[in-house]
Image 1 (cartoon, rainbow, N blue to C red):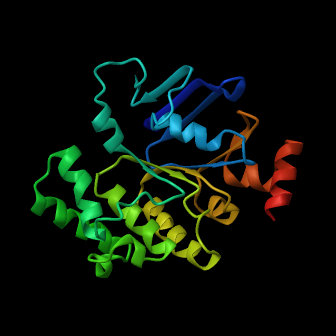
Image 2: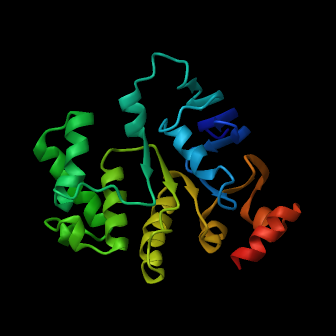
Length: 245
């Protein structure tokens, strides 16, 4: 039986009178890539931000290995944030630190690793994403694609079990999108559990194990990529896919 890592149950979130999430339910099993698609304003990014507790949901449950992180006081929030990493549209690198320092700081502060161990681990993941040779560069010296690869290395260095990607290629020039998607594809092949908000339908079709289509705060359709992208049922999804193509 598949091991459920993250389970969302009846999740709701409003900003004032704007109901952004209206009872969201889905599971992300170990090793799955869940691609979340939908128009701007459909609630996709808010969903990820709730899972990472950057936003506090109004109701429902966020279960991590069956424990509700919203109510179970035995769940350590720093450990949860380390285990559920997040990669944003904007890179959020520390401008005053070089690439290596950006990948070392969190390990020392949150995981309590020594500087030497953190550095060794950081270099391993910078190598993995093809950025080790830029270890001494400052973020301002990097392209968008390079910055995003550093962010992925920094996230991996925290030994996450799940990575949330919030439109990781939307701030990139088109020619840089491929280098980031390639790194993500490799992670998927290695069995990393990932929740990916994306407009890259080719990536979703090739890599996702499950596609979730959100519309106006609800999940309107979900299933295997061939079903959702190849044989959409809802008119809103058909319209969305036409606009993407």
